[in-house]
Image 1 (tube, helix red, strand yellow):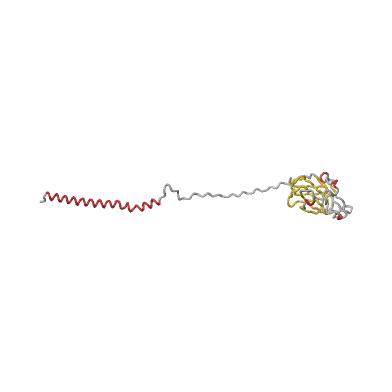
Image 2: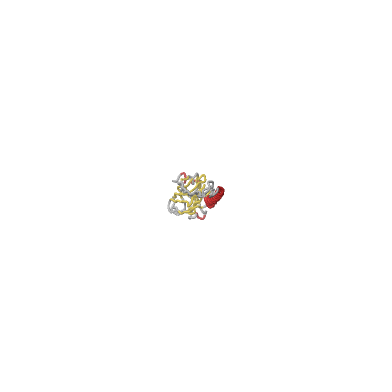
Length: 229
């Protein structure tokens, strides 16, 4: 029969064993709880690193503005229609200028009286009897204008040879030739290949047509000038 002292010792031993078992169980439980947390910690850090921060800018590229170049279509240049330019004077003109022109007293009639017009002196040959290299009419437009066409009405048979000269001064050397022509009928039109600016228009005749008397003489009824003021 177990005495009270032995029962007390047995109880004490059982208590020690129970405490040991409880301590071991507590240790194992603690290890199971902390081990997964420690194992998952690197993954959690990687996931946290992979997630964009709320303060970081989005990785999506910003839209790029596209500029389309627009080429302006040039406007068509409209050339104004030529007008009739009326000279302020017409004078006879010779190799020495207005000093030796043919019949200067009637030169203005090409502007004021086209029916009568202007007539040169008569010569023995088409080339002025070798007395001069030409004769002509000088028209003053009053200011510098743009000349496009000059038209003459002649009262002479075909054969008149003409140099059209334009310039800024009433001098033969200051009036360059812009075109030449030979008349085949009573009207002679001289359109310029390129419009020219000038104040003076010189009709310089270098060959005369025959007249009814067997000599050579020029008759000019009217002169018309077209261009832009």
